Image 1 (cartoon, helix red, strand yellow):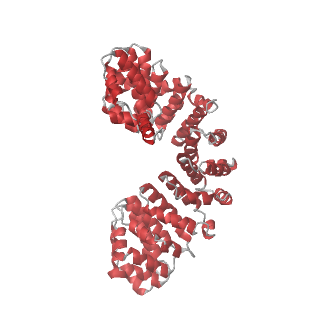
Image 2: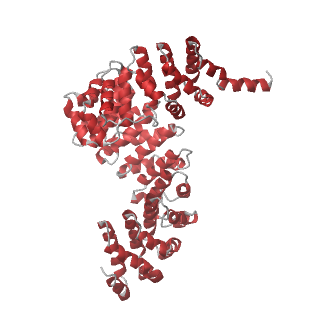
Image 3: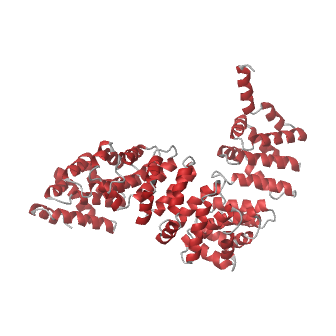
Length: 569
């Protein structure tokens, strides 16, 4: 075949046919039906074809068929719209823009069960997207509609009801409204239903109970078997059901710690989730995030995970899944949680030589992975022993971390600042590495950011860089930061930023008399700023840090002591 013919054939294979659009608008029901089937079959699982049809303007023509009287046309139109929406936000937007949503809702009350099922399936595809319309559960008609969905004998319809809860329930007021309307009881009944109903119920229950102790207590008291039913589902034959049951129990325990205190269930959850990490599909991907929610800020569970050889398993996962961004991110976050408190975990992490894998992740193409690698480094570098040993101060870690302060993603910059804030505490022989690669300049630059979180994190790192630093290092920091900028940060609109700025000055003036002199640079503007903040402190911590600064200054000579007396507190 000639090259030009080959290109033409390839192009037409991916391009939607304008003739098909004509047939979608046909007044002949048979022609329209065949066209709808053809569109549906072509776009299933094919994002390129979906985009091609969107550009052609096919979605409004497909949506128009929802006005038809024939059941088969309604089924095919709903199915095609669901295919456009499945996993494709541009498709969801096109379906909503075509005005199809209210017509799909109306199909749920159609007398033909096939039409109802097709409408519900299409709506469930839409509700997988963040673009889906949110329901206001505080409106009586919306709550009645939801209860009717959850009461349906059609499992696709009940699944739609659960999807609406997962997407729309975001506040404790909405959670409580659902509880009081009897939604919990409906969902508990679905735990005894089909596979899809069980999974949908578990996700919805977790959504309603999250961070709401009242809802969690109501769930436990609603039915004698509610909690035991969820525990039983952790033994289900299907991995996704086991994972969702674990998540539901974890949400309940995190929300209301008085429940699930038994060491047996805690141990069971640890081992279950470690097992689910081996699943090669989406369950394995999600399991790491569920595991993270189980052990985060819970030292007792971190100890259980360590005893279960979690670090070794996670290290193997790092080796095997570095090319899978979402899974890689989740593994790094679990490692961060595991190493956040326990020295034994950090030691095992280093002995496995996992640090090299995390350092490599700092340059990953995916922003979420880069941020997770920084968070992991921050946890691992909390060990004074390992910091002093210089494990984190080599160029392999320092240079990519500093480069991340330029990252286009704000969350990555903030995470990098968190890791740097720990690492610079003990840079005794490596401070020059950090400064030479532009670290100090970038910290000062970020301390001027309009984002208060960025200012806070940058000042926290500068404060730690100043900790027990020699005079040469302090002079370099103040020269870069400048006295006027430091005094303005002491008076920052954000109280948390004021605290860190004062803590920085506390470290700056700590030590010999020469250090104390920094507070008197440029006509005492730093000392004046401290005095003003102490007189109008909005938080106790501001007063505490300010008094520490004055104490350090007063440890100097008589002139310094007199200056502190004159602050006028």
